Length: 150
Image 1: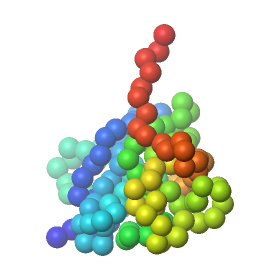
Image 2: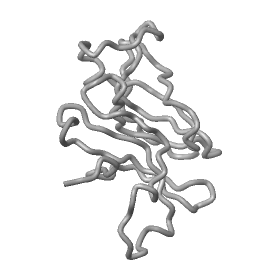
Image 3: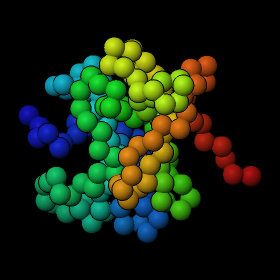
Image 4: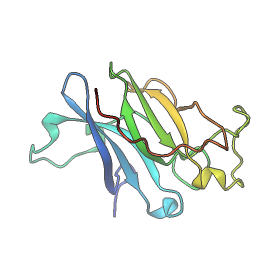
């Protein structure tokens, strides 16, 4: 019983915008058309909306990414992300949209778009598409382990 803009879960990590006015998170939904391949997007929410006592609406969520739903390669299931030091870019792990040659789109019949993991980058202002920047089958991306500062 959710509207098409609503997510069923918020996945970690949570990151704050450089100005501290917004929290960024992965919105997740694995129901309906997305039972086999969860629908995820990077979403921003102004901090002043949290705890306001008012129900959220679609206009409260700022879509950084806008991946379609369904069991298709363009439905990028994201599993982790982090912001650049400036906060202008986000790097994330997601299911591949490009073959290992780095340019051929993944076919809907290729299981790799369901289970693979590659590194993507996009702008946090929502003005660019998610761009896959890795595509090597022998080097499958996994969630990064944070390294403490010296």
